[in-house]
Length: 216
Ligand code: SIN
Ligand code: FE2
Image (cartoon, rainbow, N blue to C red; front, side, top):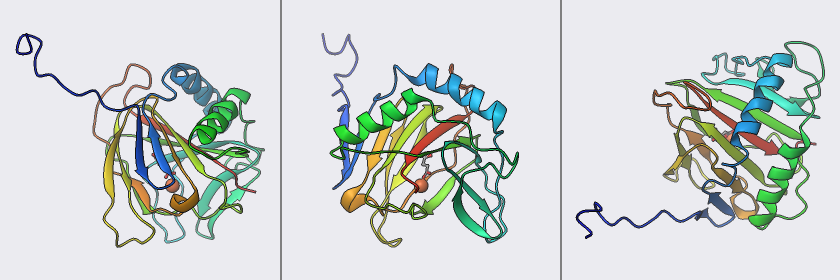
């Protein structure tokens, strides 16, 4: 029978520990994905995605926008969180309550109760776009975790150790997957490999990633 049904495959676990303090919830936001993406499109009408410049003078391959009280931005003067969108001069769009509820729930499930995100960075990856290995260290409260939600095309997420030298492991992230890292993993180096091409029923030819942070 097995041969008729194809190879008996072990289903992938729904919760996969990535490191001490870091966990992947497969499909953790799959039900919310269409509503999340619709809200991202509305946010992007008010605060358009754009390719920011790094302090080193490189234009980032991912396009960025934000919602919440603070938004992550970058220019020649450095990286920082700001209450207004430098592109429009207006405050970032408000964080929809269901965004916050999702992030707070995922953080609690990962062992970080009391998460109070005031910032949601929204990254858009088109084929070839990548995010090189980095630490998230521009937030004031490093005790709070980071919650990441993937939408659209699959990506390979790199998750390493507390030093750049430690070789990162790679995890496939799909539409609706949620990753939480905090505590001993809060300063782990992480990144995203160049996005492969494709066409996703929800997002089309891109991947969108939301990261919730406690910035202030
Ligand atoms: C990030 O590190 O800010 C985003 C990671 C991702 O796109 O999965
Ligand atoms: Fe990051």
